[in-house]
Length: 187
Picture 1 (cartoon, rainbow, N blue to C red):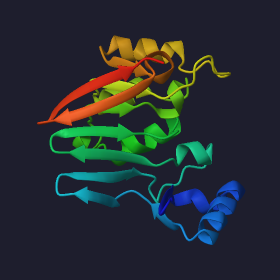
Picture 2: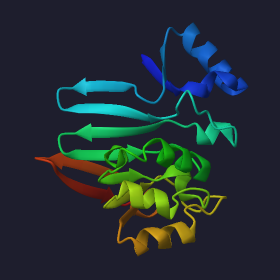
Picture 3: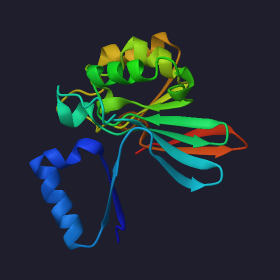
Picture 4: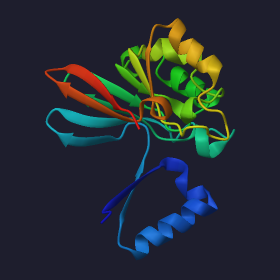
């Protein structure tokens, strides 16, 4: 049974989200609305820090995607950045917000935004995050031809290891003693 649902700050402005919230409330599911600066503490060594959206800078272009939750997982010396469906406008807003705090974005693993579409993963954003590996959640033979070939080439140019659910199947990450092991289970 679902106990909690986590939504981004702007979630209450869209009809389908309003309906979802009403359904969750009927089922007595706790709704947590997050914004930049919020921290979800899991245990002594693990937390999720919300980097975006920023309540002072809601993006108007493609609101649902660009105001997706961007959350950094921190576990000991390991970090992973989850970017939802942000596009270039969202990436630019995040880069501007953390221009004086580059460590906020730097992460060992990047969960690629918007299934690797051509509207995300700009070179500037990748340079700021500095991932050693990227994970792309994407269906095989999808209608949108995600991930975009240009984006894949961009990751290769930066010598970043690429893991894709359409090619690698289920992707499992194990962190032990601050060392990461990524295992893929082929379909």
